[in-house]
Length: 155
Image 1: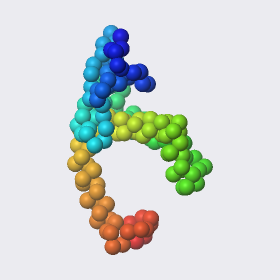
Image 2: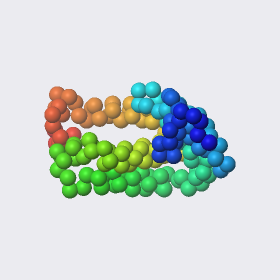
Image 3: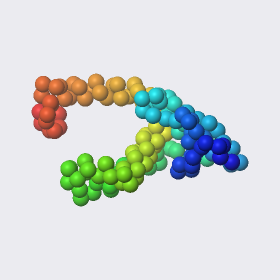
Image 4: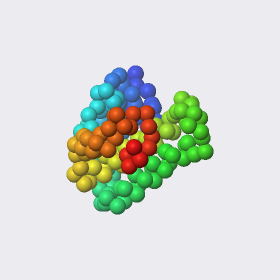
């Protein structure tokens, strides 16, 4: 039962700064902090993804091969929203309310699969990003790459 003052939103109930999420086979409710980029850590996201997967006993299906394919499929679904659009049209699409919601869901799917891939393989996402940015900084020094789209081998 929804507590007084809550409102249903996409299967979740908003309750102040919390979201009540129905979890478990018995449909028990759990209060969880609402997530926003400026207040949610990568570790919190990973924990939420792990809980979601474990609750459904999906870890058995999450081999790196399967997760990488699912990630690519979801990236393709994101790309589909922009298929045949010009660059300017694609910039406008993200401001159309209904389309934006669909795009947000595809971005979420991509990130969820990437985080689950990291969870299942033990990759430290923050460390991997830090390393990759350092590698890319060497490939694309500001003095050569600023304002240019060429691959590093063409700079």
